[in-house]
Length: 330
Image 1 (spheres, helix red, strand yellow):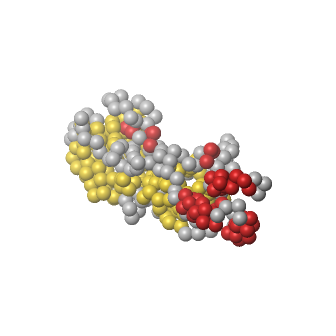
Image 2: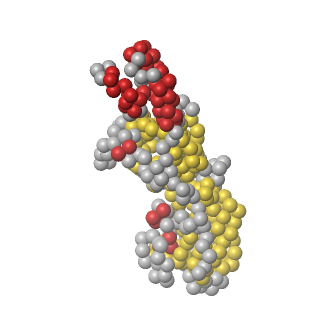
Image 3: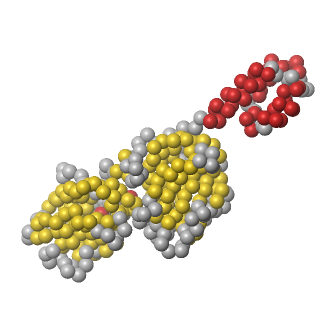
């Protein structure tokens, strides 16, 4: 610009392509302004426009802004290049016993977000997630610190501008909290969630292997997933020996549920008990009735659920298919 003053009419267009808001105000005033290469008003207008644009979050629909092309950086809890130069078996981690330790990620830009996908590397964990625009003021958007969670977590929160994400894992044992995958999205297809707890309220069945549900206790027949297999026929079931054990199902994360649907074995009329829990220690009985074969719809007071225990009380009890929330029989 200084070498081509005759082109001054083009200077404002040129400066619009330079990140002036990245230049200290002192430098703009003492270095750029005295050169008189551009009108003061034009310079201020450009700085203002760029500041406004920087403050407006970027909206990328259904796009993971933590993928390598977006230059996100890990500030605490792992290699800074975790997202930009992925390495096999690399994880984000911190000691769960230290309340001052966490995993912190800088997205490098302000994005509009409302959905995170996170894969826990091992074991059962609780955790909380906070987000920030400036790395100073933080908002907790998910708090599952009192729940038992495993494998892939799919959480939603009210859409908001986010640049920084902070995650802290909780576990009674002094152990290393590890994340093997983290993704951040803005989606228009967000699931409902409770605004107080952040717990997802699903409309479709979450007791599926593809939603990371598992049978913790019970004998699966036909497939390794038994009654939670997506297929539904008389050759696939889960059963237990009456009086010896129960069937226990674990969901990947807490869900707010108020219904279960079951397809039961062909058997004589007998009692069936269903209990739910968030920690596998304290159980709430939601169903105690005489049942027969076929489709059963169980309704109960909406509550957080991670574990479901099923107990049949006549001979060996077979459960052919299980869904929660319930789906009406077709």
